[in-house]
Length: 147
Image 1 (cartoon, helix red, strand yellow):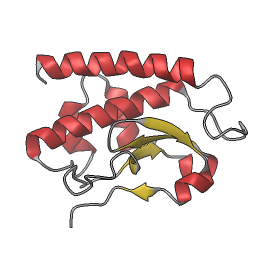
Image 2 (cartoon, rainbow, N blue to C red):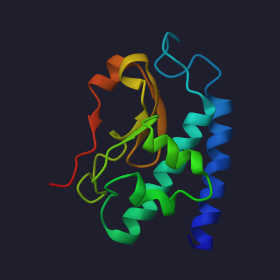
Image 3 (cartoon, one colour):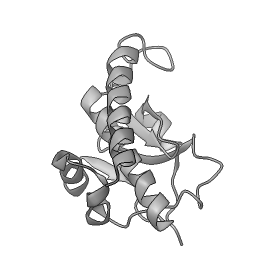
Image 4 (cartoon, rainbow, N blue to C red):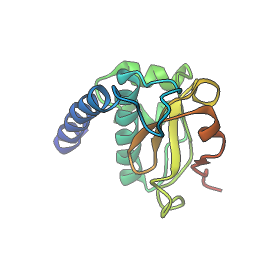
């Protein structure tokens, strides 16, 4: 991993930690406050997975096909790789930024496994995250695999 990637990963981790701990304490998004609140560690993990995905895509001009392909881009955090392997995090494999261009702020790239049934943190193609309820997730656009 290049020095630039390591610095960017460190900054993204720090920003994700601040965002997750500072912005999620109030009523949350969408008002009502009835949905599940994100675990800051899960939000941080999703942001790091997103950064690894973007770095992989920059190098190979396509999305990774599995956790093993993404492993070298996940840095020195083995729990990220394990989270993808054991299904704690669901990533849309074989997707490409090029194929999903234009809808990146609304297109789901990854999510914590319980989001479809319990709600929780979701990662979008542009690297942003937000909590979604199960109903919101059902109508969300998932990143398309390269055909």
